[in-house]
Amino acid sequence: IKLLVILRAPTDRAISAFNYFKKLRREQRSIEDALCYPPKEIHDFSFENNDFTYLEHGFYSEQLDVISQSFDSNDVLLLDFDQLKNDPKFLFDRVSAFLNIDSNHNFELKNRNVTGQVRSEIMQDILSTGKILRFLKPVIQRYTTLDVRKRIKGRLTELNTSKKKYSPELPDKQLRLKLENLFADDVHRLVKDYGFEAARKWPEFAQGRGSS
Image 1: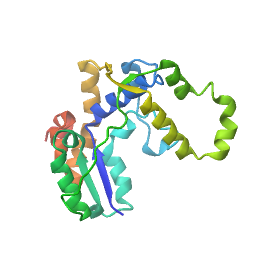
Image 2: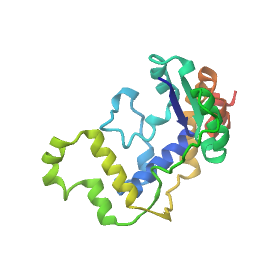
Image 3: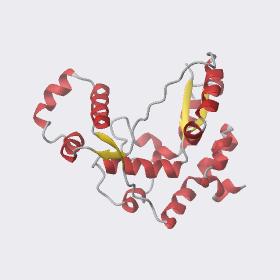
């Protein structure tokens, strides 16, 4: 087994995740209220309860520490999200070499979790709250698994997302700097302990110990 791990600058990832759930109408708080909280330990969140762990998922080194207990470093390839957007061919060449497959393989890119405008707020409320479908819950849970339900819900959410650009809510400079400092030491570890040189370009690396 080999793992491909795509990492995004954690502050940008947290902001993007907030706006994604804001668009889904599941997040009702302001960006300041949603992102200003003491992060939980990594083991405190689960597959069933991880939607609003905006900060926890940004401590990549801590999560890689867990992965390294089960996987050899030669079987894990760390990739940069910005590189995927800006230079996919270079990234796919690295993936091809890592997986020992033909570099001319035709990779197909599809956008997922796109933060666009919802087509129908009523439909989105149904998907987000499940109030209207609550009476069907016992039957649905009996004949489907949690993974299947999440996949169906995700697909319906995609279909209910238009290409019309969503106007994201952005943090002020003070909050952004606070988040960058929060992640700084972990980002520094990405470079030092895991050799992820792409993280040097992240704004978090310029903060705290990351500036060394």
